[in-house]
Length: 348
Image (cartoon, rainbow, N blue to C red; front, side, top):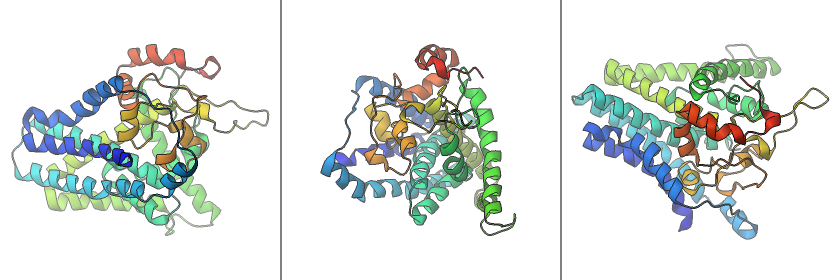
């Protein structure tokens, strides 16, 4: 039964349903839950540094239960999105309520959408990779699949990586640099992939072109069924969703850089190049994303068997709490800057 603990991640979409049902100031219940209640629980509950070993590890790796807990997010994401769009276009809402619902849906798109897409995007099965791209669609971030898998994992913890935050860089500066740099990087990576196969821009294998078409068709469909207000609501929610992702990107590698070796190349990615957290609540609601050091050490490893490495830099708080801290740059710098190894500090 303890394996079902990851169903706690579904409390985020549940909180969004509470926002929709009660409306009014309850429209802000999801951000309150994500950035107030969960951080409080993180502080109160203990850390867990244990790793799965032997037969238990093998059983968990093979268990389909962990996969189905990821798949369950797909109907939940699109069901919630469809219901919300229908609701806001058939009922009168005050502006402050719409803002609260945009934030609520956006948080769910970031956590149960993009975060799950990130996990499925690393899988070997093609159908799971398709599901990953589907979950990226409502956040207008389908290019993340290419940039993350072919760019970030090769360049993480270097100044060349758009998703690695520089020492003393604020999260707001990072949002701007990372969003645009990742998008253009994805096109460059796509061009290299096409060139390697001697394919042209309009080739069927130009995934970036397909992503653009799918996202455009998505907007057209939204306008057709829900009108302009539906398009604006969905686009704003998608922006909140990908900014949630970028905030996580910010805290995952903040200030950590790899050394260049004599050949001019960077040392390989190691456990010391990502911030790790063993805070139980953050681990569960983010499907072990907080054991990010091990994820970069072996990206194909499934979330349920990610390990803790004692040489990994440890965050003083869990990821949800750290996201809140990042919104206050002076406080973030005061807490995190002393923890960045001196040899890695390069001022942005």
